[in-house]
Length: 178
Image (cartoon, rainbow, N blue to C red; front, side, top):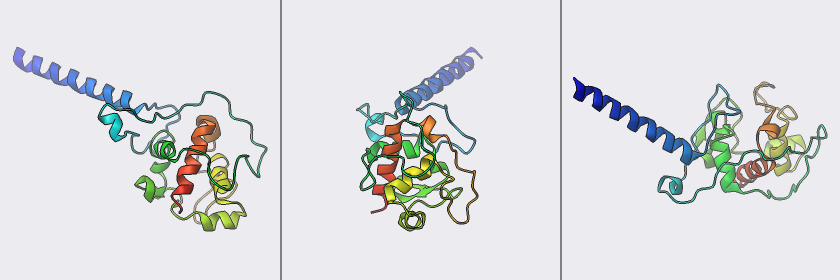
C-alpha cells in the first residue's frame, strides 16, 4: 500500500515539474487570453534543447494613441519588424492562430478570415499591404472581411501587445504573402 502511494506521489511531482519546465521555456502567460484559446505554444527547437530562443515580449511602455483611422505610422513599403518573433507572437501570446488560417504559421482555424492572401483585401481597403495588416490588428473594425461579422476580433491588441510585437506580426504576415 505504501509503495503505491509513494509511486503515485513521485509520478505527480514529476508531472508538475515537467509542466513548470514547459511553461518557463515557453515564456507564456495567460494575460489577455480568451476563451478561443492561445493556439500553439511558442516553443522553438532551441528552447527544447536548452539553447537560446526568442522570447515573447510583453509591453514595457504605453504605445502611442491612435489618431482614429488612417495610417498608424511607420513604414508602409516593407515591414520593419522581426518575422521570426512575429510567428511566435502569432502562434502564441496573441492567439491569432486560434482564429485564422495562415500556412506560414501552420494554422487552419476558420473563426476569422484566411490570412494567406491579403493583397486583394488591402487593395479594396485602399491601403498598402503592411499598413492594411497593422490597421487590421489595431483597429479590426476599419475593414471587415466579407462574410465575417464585425466585433469578433479583439480590439485591444494595441494595449496588450508591445509596439514591437505588432511590428513583428506585420512583418511575419506580410512576408507570408510573397
